[in-house]
Image (tube, rainbow, N blue to C red):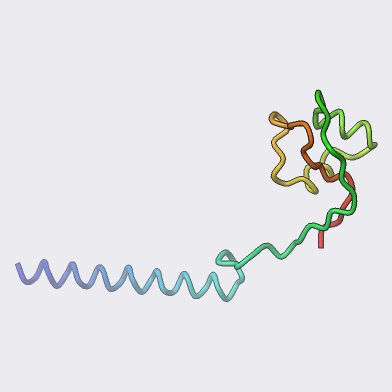
Length: 94
């Protein structure tokens, strides 16, 4: 019984050491564990959504690129646009 207990404790120790080493490596490499996004969005111009607006309609109306529009509206759900919703139509990523 003591032999099994010692083996179990050694296994836990090895797993703990591996976990600590992997966390240290991630921190040193800058992988994960970030406090915030390094990119920040600055919206320069907005429009209010009107009844019947769609993402594609806004993109066409303001002559935007779909990828750009998605990037400057990161939390936008194109299926649930509501009247009066502010949509960014011009901005930058820092």
